[in-house]
Image (tube, rainbow, N blue to C red):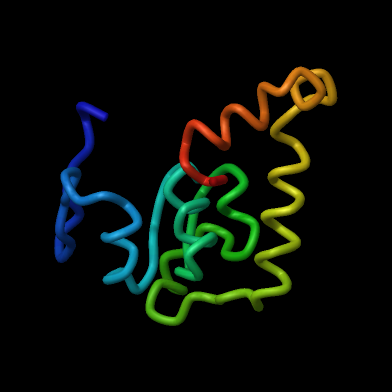
Length: 108
């Protein structure tokens, strides 16, 4: 995003792969939820104003020091719910869904 700006007291880095950056992350704060999805999947708390990443921590920066971290079972159910909404029956039947996961390397 061309208008992205660093927040005082934070480090702005758009060159480190997200899975590596999250290993050193206490909490993700985001306006939208894309990066929050990555965070929740890796067990990193996230605070988002909008989207599916905002489910566990409503947008309130007072929670950034001690963000809520759902249990593994809660995160698994959330991931299941998200995945359930991603592909239509037709896309699954055609093989498009399977091809996507194979192409991304998520399935060997």
